[in-house]
Amino acid sequence: MTAFSDLPIRDDLRGLTPYGAPQVHVPIQLNVNENTHGIPEDVARDVVESVAAAVLGMNRYPDREFTELRESLAGYLAADVAPERTGSTQTITAEQVWAANGSNEILQQILQAFGGPGRSVLGFPPTYSMHSIIAAGTGTRWIAGERGDDYALTPGIVTDWIERTEPDLVFLCAPNNPTGTPLGLDVIEAAYAASRGMVVVDEAYAEFMPDDAPRATTLLPGRERLIVSRTMSKAFAFAGARLGYLAADPAVADALRLVRLPYHLSALTQAAAVAALRHAPEMLAMVDDIRSQRDRMLRELPALGYSAHDSWANFVLFGGVRDPRAVFEALLGEGIIIRDIGIPNHLRVTAGTEAETSAFLDALAALGASQSEPVDRILG
Image (cartoon, rainbow, N blue to C red; front, side, top):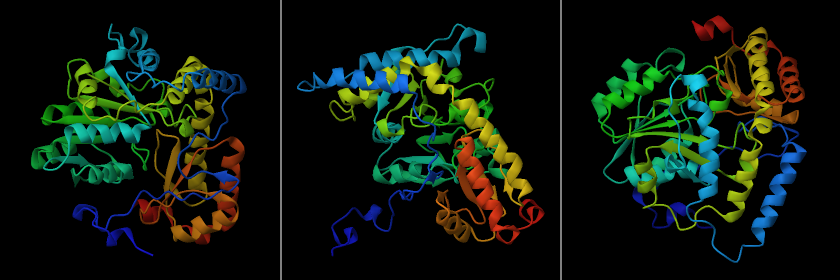
């Protein structure tokens, strides 16, 4: 059988591996940060009815500008900058919003428009693995910056890396994946001030942040090179629908129109997303439960001998694992899959339902202390 490396593939892609989250069907799947809560029945019914209506017009191309969807997303994002939250009269308009098939396509279009051969993007590993993979796919040079203690970023760290490397784009993750690390607005402001290129803040897990934590969207006025990327895959439990979006200066959407494929968002995707956004409060009602299960793991994992890193996302990175692969396989044998993300002595687990979280913690406890290193050895 021919390997793809035997084909005349681009030289800069040789030796790379594709995104590889395991796809294993087991009863408890806590490995890819999905929202494991089901979609409420009345919301599902509205989505189905909306998609069915769109099917009747499938002989025509969809709205290329996905106008209704952009208006719905702008209405949803308006809560980020509402006067009662920010004290300002700032708003977000449909002209500032762009959408695509998942936030990965959003990031790809950004790099197609502002990156490419001869250009570079600065990121700060460990971070979302698709950042560097999409960079490679678009021929954009990936620069791996470094984080501080406990994976934190500070204004000084990002400013130093930007001044030394002069990237065309900067990718920041708020909160960061896979560490859950919060990112202060002061870090974003510092990155923007130091950079002459585009600054992209990946806020895929924004809804799991504390309610009073300001979002990066509040920094958009006067910053035409700032892009805030979001997704409906996580808090909205819409991973299978594939809908990502961004907020930025309207000129950014104009730039992305140059690289997007014609009619890139299907009529079915648009209809489903608009229907889900009509039920935003109901869809997000499960967020508090997810955060409570995340915080529960932050409390209980140390009691089992592991070190849990603070998280503002819907997952927890925990250290002190003597043999991550052995723990991963042992849990898999119990019908539970979590994620080995390649950080030595660490594993990552998604916050699921109360029952799923209990099953994970009970199974981990049953493995015994032989699977964990002393916490003070990991932290000190």
